Length: 317
Image 1 (cartoon, rainbow, N blue to C red):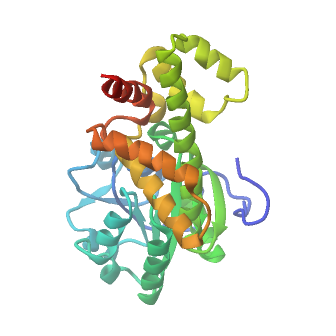
Image 2: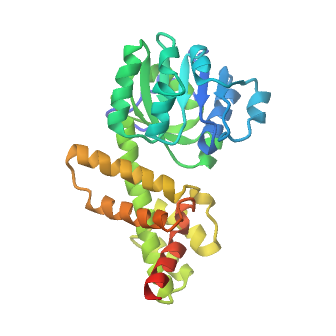
Image 3: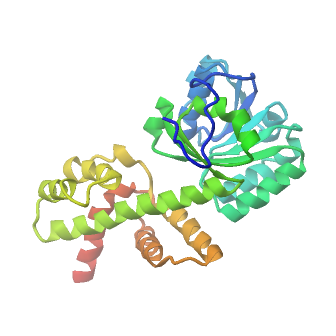
């Protein structure tokens, strides 16, 4: 589904996965999200290369589809028309482009760097200027949804970039996304992603806190969930949290507390830059920080209710 309205990408009559030109694509970061992206790019016939890395998911299927593995990000970039980054955050993006990855100095003239990470917008703007100074282009295309949708080619992309550059790479983006939202120039996609994640992660944390209180007061989880589903508490946050409350499952949101804290910290940094209120966001960040301080950073976000109850028991003990 393509959203309509100001700032959205033109359809241009293109169907999903259709290529205007056979650009060579190199991807850095074949992890939980990046693997699905890479698989869909290769399945749609785009020449694909990837950086070999211990953090990658198994790449046998990519190799079978004809993808080439590189041990050097710079060498891969030198042979790519599009360099797609799917790494954790700003430090990793900066390292790939400016540090140990050496990608900035290897970019082809006219090539495009597409950053699908969640990053600090002010860094994104600065990196975009450096990439443009090297004769290439920069597009931030932050992702929402989960690894499941990545494998299905149904991600949402929140995009910042020059309209003509975004239009040029839209056929590629269509291979692994269902919805695309063009928010403005470079950096705007990452700003929109932080806004989205504050609402998404904040809602799950808010419901988790309520769920912990419901459990401690003796209200059954199924009654609590059913009440919210039939009232004002219904939404994507509850849909992602309720499988854990009812079945102990986390498949709907395999996103760690560490990553959530990183995103909320980026959001608070952005609000400080903008001079906008962040009292609620600061409370969510502090909640996540306490869980990380207690050694729970690698736990998935939907498990918060149990962790919060443990914290409460520690206080009462």
